Image 1 (cartoon, rainbow, N blue to C red):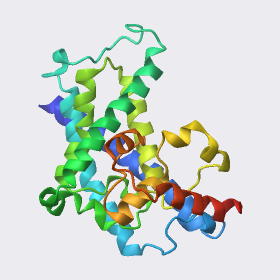
Image 2: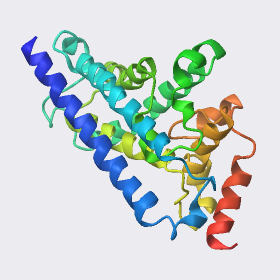
Image 3: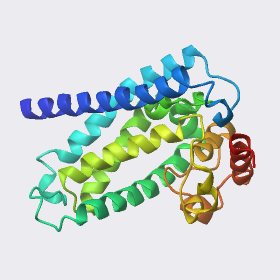
Length: 255
């Protein structure tokens, strides 16, 4: 029990540090230092209020506790023998680290898409997901702004990962970092993709900040986290997405 509490405290501290360092630094740069420079990149022209940022931070702190609990469960000794976690870095080829990271993102995107759609059921939405959707004009602080039930479900993807993929601790750390950085970008409130991204094949596959911002402003559609794939297969992509993205990029680049 003492070891588990110690592990929980460590994971919680890491989760909070990741949140405040990454979301805080991005918020400081984009919202405090460079708003005049980046004004053409702003997705919604209105500005969120200070009370919105405080609410997002408060919910994110409480969410970090539930996320840490889910990770502790995933790494606990009681279920470890049944998982695919491996300790020796050479137990699998080193190339498996980046490959398993990519596969983790694919698994997470699938998990997130269907969990997200479930939480948009009218009964569940009112008691859980509505907390996240209070941020109709999200900021980086909204990355972990969840109801406690949703927060645990968000963290529980790690439980899924350790049961479906051989993963090393390095992969799990890279996954946590990568997924959070993408999450912050999704809630940035600004579109920062380069001009050439629109003409690349990646535009057809990857989400953008505009993509997820539309979900927050319209409350439905664009349920995916990293990729457009599930939304396009299931017919849930917002039909105005490409037009909105092009409008913002035209404002940024003038063509």
